[in-house]
Length: 203
Image 1 (cartoon, rainbow, N blue to C red):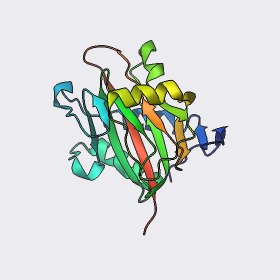
Image 2: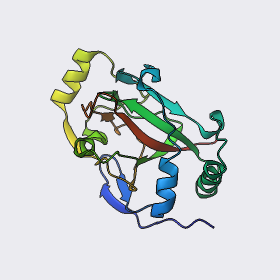
Image 3: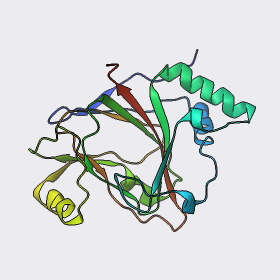
Image 4: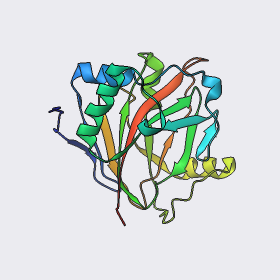
């Protein structure tokens, strides 16, 4: 049986619950998971709704063929830990960002595990949460750049998750759980890598 750290630390409880678990996985397992991010030309990362610059790709494990036996064992371990939870490999190109949003109503919690390349600039590439009094009932993404600028000028940063290794960050979704990924210029071929885990309602 795979053992992982369950020592949860709360970072904020209002207006959105934010938390972290340090050293979530055994270090060897964490490094094995990192190897699952197969080499991909950053030019192949396509622009998608919600990502305002330079593209992203999210891949469910079932959609990628892991032929290597060690990779298959790692996926089995992940499934053992996460059971049937939805989890995706998540990649954003250098300078890529996410527009302000709160997450879909079908989700009640999200977890993020980051895989930095040990560049000192990366620490700023974590998820940013915003303190806003404006509810977002339908998970509308603010995509117009002027409106994005207004949102950021009118609201203040509540908390930014540092983009550090083997720390599981998470939040409980509500109508005020506004968050973004702010663009960072790390290097021309850089790809931001994470695993995102979603807890969703069954109905």
